[in-house]
Image 1: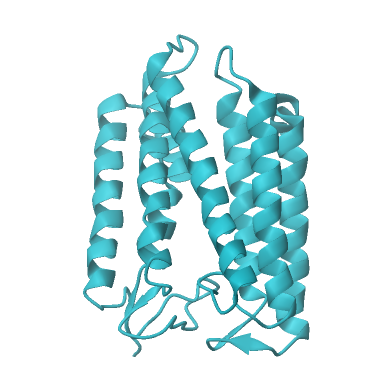
Image 2: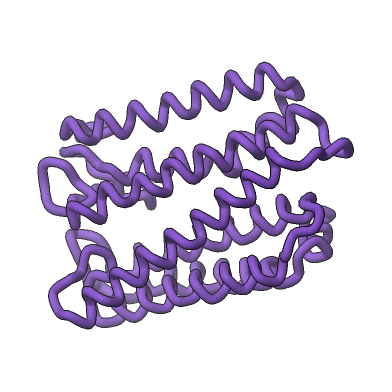
Length: 254
């Protein structure tokens, strides 16, 4: 509860936007149980559910980190995130309601434009995050433990790199290597158990934004160990990317 209160105090806009995303994720999860429409062997509301959680986590994470930045235009960043992420989740949910793809859908000129706008929105937010990473390198933060500061810096670097890995999927209009947008019953993630899945490295790399600072702050409490963790974590994300491009799944069917 102390974390929630601090988060609200640090950035009220992104705090409440994150809550909206989490509420939507619950609604989308309920829809996966109440509807039977599927796309590529998975319920159409599964994608909005996953995206709503992901966007909520990102919003809360950046709300926490940006509080440390001196002389940063937080309102511009807040509303950039809110507007662009709202567009993404609304379009993804709208397409789900029609039983159609949002990602990789260029079946009409309108869908092609909207898909391009989704890619543009994600690119803008990623570049903005990269700029925030630059500010964490360019400023001094004497109030922060050095290991925690480096975990934020390295987490942002990995987030940016593997966010742009999404273009490897977008350019192919396919997240699978060896099949067409294959999904398997791999928990709620849906990663393929039969062919390569580029979503694996995308997911692992992007969540360095949360994983590295949490482990560094609560467990490692050491700068060198934090850097080693970031290196190993980055290698893990890279290896899953290579594995996927070789057409091999992370976990095979029994």
